[in-house]
Length: 268
Image (cartoon, rainbow, N blue to C red; front, side):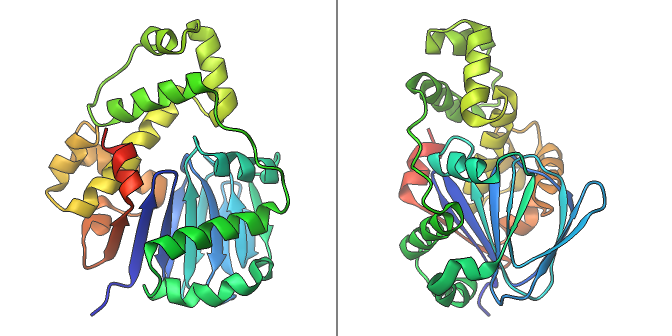
């Protein structure tokens, strides 16, 4: 029997595709673009109890929400905080935490939604679909420039550290960027929208998800991903995704595909 849930990972984003999902309160560091496959609405419930019925939506990073997409089919595109696409979505959101969007905005792209749901579209075509979906919601917004190279150097170091369980002194990161610690902290938050500590946790989660594609014991994945133990990883995953690591790591539950560029970026 084919796997009904699909997870495709690239270096700067991942696509979780599922026929249905119901989660408790979750919040994560990525910006998230949600789209109903069937066009029927899903439900988002915010921390203050507000209920939003949406056929598509953009959710800002670190925004707590409950999700009920029971039977409509859902595409959940999660964008890494260090990417240009993240900055495009952030600019589209402005100061809003959740921006409902009419799924009709995707036009002919919707012809591919059913194929994506049923695992009939290859990883390169899905990557192109994700790019076109982002362009559809961001409109003709001018492409933003690359990250400051000093921040890129720090990000590369954090990618390595995420798999070592290491705590990197801020002074070391500041020296890598040739900046004072205060200036480094400010520049990093300005460019990524979050603290270095929060990004490092995101990097650990991102690395652990990728390791799940190779199988192996969850305890080993947790340690290789930089977590204290499997219980720490499990709590973090529930808080971020509303899904357990054991579910994501089960090839019978989720088919995980990792792009070669993602392998190079996240297995340093």
